Amino acid sequence: MAARIVYGRHAVEAALRSDPARVSRVWVAEGRRDRALRAIAEAAAAAGIPLETVPRARLDRLVGDRHHQGVAARYRGPEPRGEGFLDALLTGLDGPAFLLALDGVEDPRNLGACLRTAEAAGVHAVVAPRDRAVGLTPGAVKAAAGAAERLPFVQVTNLARTLGRLAQDYGLRVVGAAADAPASLYEADLRGPLVLVLGAEGRGLRRLTRERCDQLVRIPMAGAAESLNVSVAAGILLYEAVRQRRG
Image (cartoon, rainbow, N blue to C red; front, side, top):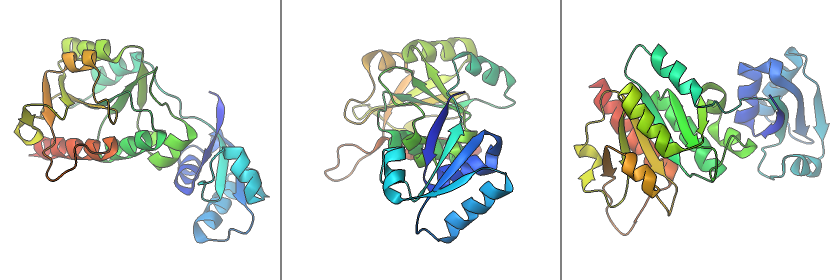
């Protein structure tokens, strides 16, 4: 498991809280004395992890992003799971499967936000293609605010083929989001074994992905807006599914 730099208060706190054995060093910007960073420093000291106070400019260079909130850490994990993980997961579930698939999302902040929302909604795993899509970059881990450490993120070679296998082998219903879909989200049955599929902003779902969907649904839009950010759309779809599944 390769070490990488994670940054931002939530990402570093999550690593120290859930997996301190994989944190090898913490950096804090000079001049920062707020309560959150003091708590991080105390957690690092309690775990015996070296903590270094450095000029902010050095921290900027270290993470390659000025929006690091004054803290970063060297962390081994989490790593994306392979497709075989899905088989073990789905055969071991007690209740109906609930998955989120992201088709070609390239913005790390959007991926992180989707992971955070998916975990909150009770999703069992998030699935994405390995190529032409963002992975668990430091920016994605930061935006996930700890969810990347807890929610399995599965990268697959061919998303359309994986969706077809999930439907055939495990009985999951594949429901995709598309602005031109004839049915509203609120007309769809989202109970039972389910994988919700969202595409990237602008492009939406790719053709082969659309063809693997059992149903396409749209989020009703009022006013001049034509589309929503993928993480916002994920929240709307996931929580409609949660409402139906709990009901």
